[in-house]
Length: 70
Image (cartoon, rainbow, N blue to C red; front, side, top):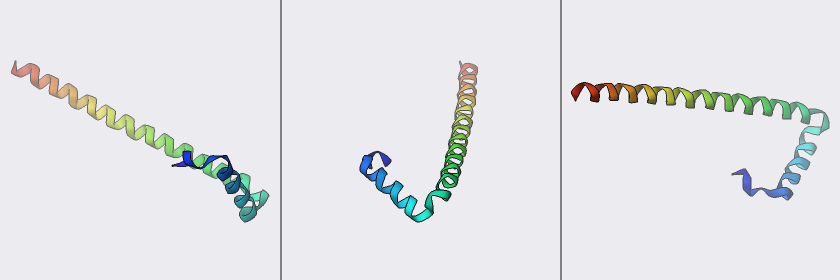
């Protein structure tokens, strides 16, 4: 999604952000955005690892059942 913006688009976004929020608020907004993005990535990793763990448990259970029937 963001890969199609390009350098001119990023410059335009930065200029608009400076005009709207001003130079004093922009670092605060950047920090808040960075923290939000960091928390989102952390949550995504945790969710992914939970799903992988459940998948591995189910796989082991299926292997146990197939070994019992043989």
